[in-house]
Amino acid sequence: MKKVLNIVLASLFAITAAFVVWAVVSGGADVAISWNLMWFYTLLVGAVVCILCAAVANLVQNPAGLKKTGLAVVIVVAVVGAAVGIALSHEGLKIPNAEGGFFEDPFELAISETGILVTYAVAAASILATIVAEVRNVFK
Image 1 (tube, rainbow, N blue to C red):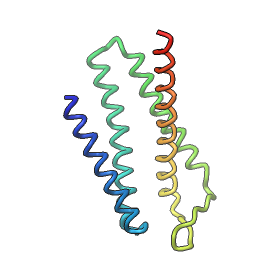
Image 2: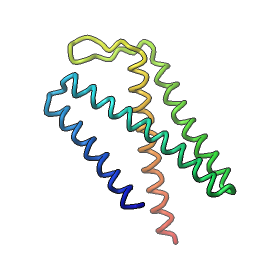
Image 3: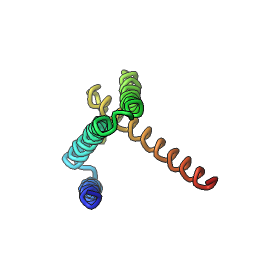
C-alpha cells in the first residue's frame, strides 16, 4: 500500500510541476493560469475529502478513537471555516490583473483566498508538528 501511495504522490507532484512550468513558460497566459487554478482547486477538494474519509475510516477501525476523530474533523472544519470567513470579509478588496484592470468576481476572489489561507495554515501546522516532534526526540 505504501508503494501505491508513493506512486500517487509522485504522479500528483509531476502533474503539479508540469502545470507550474507551463504557466511560467507561457508567460502567464490565461489558459495556463486557469488550468493551474483548476488543478489547485482539485487538489484542495481532494485533500479535504481524503482527510474526512481518513477520519471516518479511523472511526470504523477504532471506535475508541472517537474523540480524536471528532477533534480532527472539528479542526478541519474550523480552519476552512475561518479561511472562508476571512476571505469573505474582504468585500471591497481590489486585486489588479495582468491587463491593467481588476479582478471583480467576489466568488473567484473568495475561493482563491480561501485556498491560500488554508495552505498557509496547513504549512504552519506541519512546520510546528515537525519542530515539536524533533524537540521531543531530543529529550527522549
